[in-house]
Amino acid sequence: MNRLDGKVALISGGARGIGAETGRLMVAAGARVVLGDVRDEAGRETARNLGDAALYVPLEVSREADWTAAVATAVERFGRLDILVNNAGIFLGKSIEEATLADWQRLCAVNLTGVFLGTKSALPALVDSGAKSAHGSAVVNLSSVAGLVGSTADPLYSLTKGGVALFTKSAALEFARKGYRVRVNSIHPGTTRTDMNDVVLAARAHHLGSNDIEAVRRQALERIPLGRMASAEDIARGIVFLASDDAAFMTGAGLVVDGGITAQ
Image (spheres, rainbow, N blue to C red):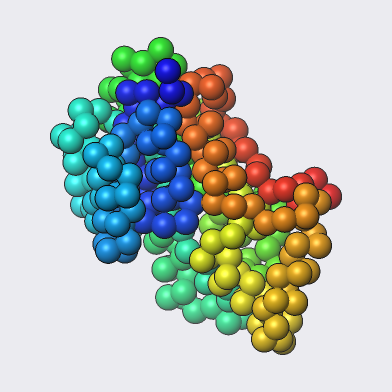
């Protein structure tokens, strides 16, 4: 028996990177997945590669109507919804002085509004499936180590990810108080080999007055006690754990997967 047999998951930002890898591991663990994203071509290709257990839906996470449609599609296609992964996020790499109000509003729309709307929209289906499951249903929110400690590259990103971390704890407590069998946990990736990380490295180089991204990459590696960046699979494995019944007694928790950076 696989650890996610019979489960249905909705993953935002599922077209590539951590979201796509999470979808792959969940299907391998026995789940059926709905991948939501704004990258239609990449999303459809990822779903095709995962076979009949996967489906792609267009999902702009700051639009409530998109979330309503995505949840409805998951329930109509697969009969239920057990897992929500709020994975979609963006990184701007601008300092407080450089960032405009429009920059901030765009960051909030994806990193904060998206998490709120996803949780609110999926909640009725999660409550329904949780009531019928031995260990309830699950929400996994993607925060960051930048939600635990300050970010030299983008304090505004850190602000949004800190918000995700505390929203996770508060939602977990609210749902427990109401008797909902819905666990809510966050995961905090460290430096990870994704397209977003390339933007992070470029931002750090910019702030240092340099165009030498490889030098910045080497500096980043030197800060990681385990001596390597995370792969998307490293982070996805943590997400699968939090979504599974293996984490049945965890709610309001933050799982740090950072190679030891925040232990220093």
